[in-house]
Image (cartoon, rainbow, N blue to C red):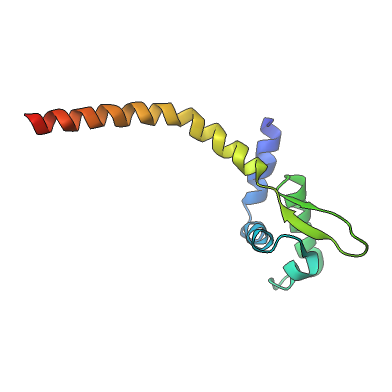
Length: 110
């Protein structure tokens, strides 16, 4: 994932409304835009703008089925972000925790 793509994902997640939309769609995959709109005191156009930001970030995908637009969550961008930082720090913390374990065990023997 390129840096500008990471920026897009983080900017999309910066909004509480957009995080709520992800939660709503994750709880009801295939729900329609109208069902998401019902959860907010925003106009349909306002919610659609948030949905479009999430789609541009790759966090939501939709398909046009007649007049309906079912929504689905795509967690792949979040997985990429998680792996980027967890892999980077996993060995660092594993080494530190191992040293701490040995230090505690030594102190118990003394």
